[in-house]
Amino acid sequence: MNQFNYQEAFGAEDRTTDAMQKAIREWYDLYYGRNCPQGHDPGQRVAYTIVSKLVKTMFGEYQTQTQGVFAHGVVAALNEKSREAMHQTLVGGECYLKPWVGEQVTFGVIPRCNALIFGRNGKGEPVDMGIWERSSRGKYQYTLLERRYLDEAGHTVIENRLFRSANDRNLGQEVPLSQLPDYAALPKRYVYPVGLANLGLVRIKTPGINCVDGSWDGVSVYAAAVDLIRAIDENEAQLIEEFRRGESRIIASADMLRDGLQDHLFVGMDDDPQNVGIHIFSPQLRETSYLHRKQEYLRNVESVIGLKRGMLSDANEAQKTATEIASSAGDFNLTVMEYQRIWEKALADGVQLCIQLAKVQGMDTEQPEIPAVDWGNGVLYDEDKTWADYMNMVSTGLVKPEIALAWRFGMQAETEEDLAAIRQKFMPEL
View (cartoon, rainbow, N blue to C red):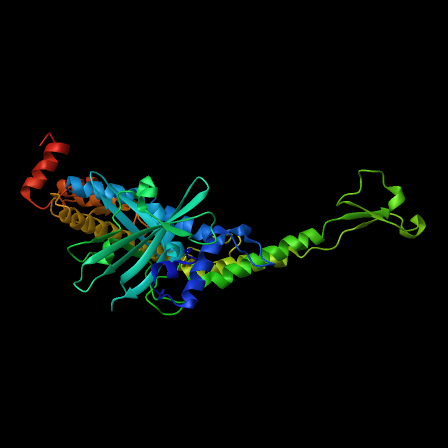
């Protein structure tokens, strides 16, 4: 029997509201520049620009330090997916990282558009959900459906099913998991002896209150600016049409034009040459008003989202006071820091979850430790200036040189043994 949608195949109803489902589709449409309404031009790709700039800023000088071999492997695997995961989080409001714990730890990124939420607890955390991934082999498309939920004993249950279809209009018919080598080792149903945090997934969710329907769902970084982005796309389409309509035309009688000259520049009129003659049609353009309107839209987007003034709009044309510049920089700094914090939480959650999964499988691991994250020359401080301040305090005798060196190279300086190790490594003359 063919299955035509995910809810039918899972046998459960998605609890995501209609408003949120519509919003999620629109966020992805804006990001990928697809399904653009008539009269709009998506060429500006504002949504993509917002997400790309934030992610690049977040991870520009990002580094991590981890104690323990197993935890180091987990953090390394998370770092491989860091940018992809944050891109998906900023677009869809949240995403999930699915770990595979074995000889090596790996993670898969599950975007919000590939997840159905069938139930949540009082904290808004999913306790019953379905996720899927699609792949192609030859003339068939395969869809793996994975349902995760808590049973009555509070244990995490995972159920896997595979569907095959000759097109992308439906899921098709269910087939054995062994039909694809990638899924051959998956059990059809597995019950963990414990309840796993977030059903065994690392959940990354944008901060702040849901501005779409007030639900527990996370919202895109540009959720509040969707209408403004659409207005920019409409404005851009109007500007393009203005130039298209304003192209100069040389109008002449048809018998005055040689073959090959009749194109978008030369226009022939089938009339008496004495009546038509030759003249140039060149209407006046309204370029300035359209461009000013687009710049204002972009500045409004920056204001709504908390981006630094000039990141999207033309900073050279924006007239700003010193107070406005400082305010926009501060807003941008805080916006970036918010997303840096949720990635730090994802790192800590990922280490804890993988150690829990390893113990379930009987693997020996060390005690979990929270990874140390260094964001480099961060958005609210300058590392070089901080180092200069340390050096000034050392020269005036306010701080021991060992303390400054410990900060500079990320070393411990809590005990006398720590200080001795720093002197041994960096101060051999002492």
